[in-house]
Image (cartoon, rainbow, N blue to C red):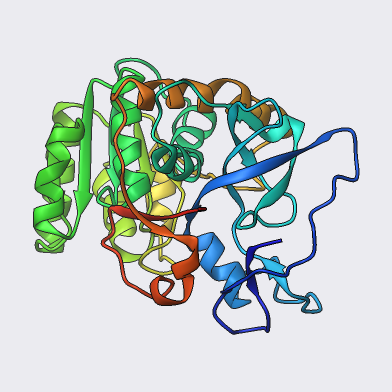
Length: 325
């Protein structure tokens, strides 16, 4: 069987034609003939041996990729979350992690969307309890997941969407995706705090979705800090840590502000909530994408070119997708 595998720990993935065949071991599993697989930071971390899920395990060669798009035995197309890697001729997928694709959807887009949706809609709806009319601040919105978060927040009925980021050109493009206001993280921290405070006074922020953490996230919390009187309730949901894994927070912010600090990621979701994602939220987003109402920029390559492409840098708003031919 052809596959993209990591042969040795710490070595970049390679394309091989003689990998062991994939076998179904349970009636609750299905075999997917793989068509397209996106590569996320998670996939790169696992492939490099740096992800916590693999650092303490004895190394054995493995197939790269966690999820993708493929064809079922009846010829229909579906998204699946692979049990033993995804970048191979065939992948084993549990039935409850299988989502049919609507007609007309671009396969590369369908492959790239699910991870970004996990990092956006689960944070907004499951952890942040986003309601129609809410004011949402998306911190670090120029990346793939942040761009999807803007579009889905608009779809779910947010009244105002504020987006932050460092790249001015990328920030300016966010208006077309649905952002009402943009704020540069490159500006003076004191001015940034003042700008957030002014927005919060005029249109109180209901929900912050944070992909950055670190100093800039601390700055937002400082901007939301109360003055000893009644404060508006704001949920702050952390999803990523592009600026580092640690942040200093003054205890006075928590005492003087009705702020709810939450995280969103594997471990914070229940099985029921994950089933909601696969049965309701992901199919809804696939339909939006098929109708041209959900956009994401993909960079596609043949999987046979893995060795030439694997380390090629992408912009923050692009997702690499391998097409199996």
